[in-house]
Amino acid sequence: MKTLICGSIAYDTIMVFGDRFKNHILPEQIHILNVAFLVPDMRREFGGCAGNIAYNLKLLGGEPLIMATVGDDSGPYMYRLEHLGLEATHVKDVPGTFTAQAFITTDLDDNQITAFHPGAMTQSHQNKVTDARDVSLGIISPDGRDGMLQHAREFRDAHIPFIFDPGQGLPMFDGEELMGFLKLADYCTVNDYEAQLLMERTGRTLEQLSGAVEALIVTLGGNGSQIYSNGRRIDIPAAEPEAVIDPTGCGDAYRAGLLYGIGNGWEWEKTGRLASLMGSIKIGHRGGQNHKLTRDEIAVRYKAAFGDNLW
Image 1 (cartoon, rainbow, N blue to C red):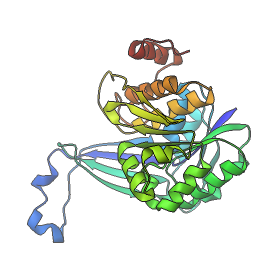
Image 2 (cartoon, one colour):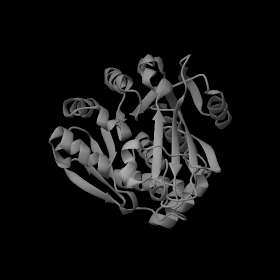
Image 3 (cartoon, rainbow, N blue to C red):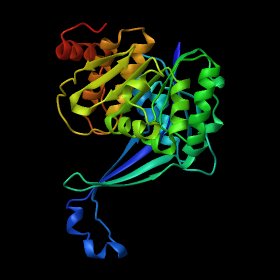
Image 4 (cartoon, rainbow, N blue to C red):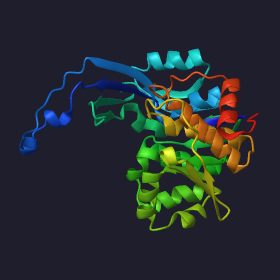
């Protein structure tokens, strides 16, 4: 059975400015800001939440099925999906649009200026969950607003359990809409900042919010994560990374671990630890899809981190 991953397919263009923004932005002239940064170091990465999650789930031996929308410039990404053996039956081309993409400029202090163009992502509602076959589990990650709302209803109507993963899309929804997602979803995962925003928007505590789903998962970066389920909080330790190079896509790698554990009926302690490990593996590589480990290598890393066998 397959895992349906609804979310974005995107290109990330990352540029490095060899100085500090503060040396070129004059506070007293901020009202007439007009600056240009020379960026001799530039790379283009394959990203987007759906692409990243599917990539990591495939590494674990899962069967991800991507549901996303792309534009006229999607050729290189579609070729990559085919090369990786990732099924793209439900990656829909929207003519006359660009694939979603982020343009990120980073300075020497790791400050970032980002411009994000959603492009075809805004048409994600053109995809229907019911078009996918042999699906036993799903996830709704950041995508077009209408698509996220629609896919949540479709998952529930099809009786397919799913994770609600609002991510950067969380600010698009008010408290009532967010509670609507939680009532439809079986699981919800957010980072610590998103958890605070979720509580503010809904007027509820994490313990109260967790009562609406089977499990509420909150990631805490280097401090691990917490899983609220059945009235208890399970503390998941962070897996020690071999290197800290780039956090881009770490949350998506974590979510792939969640999907694999849930799909295989594992207890939350083991599921959370696998998710933690996947995030720690990713942070040691640039971009969201450049780490290349086999299942056996992942199992060795899991044993080293937690002292238990994975498979």
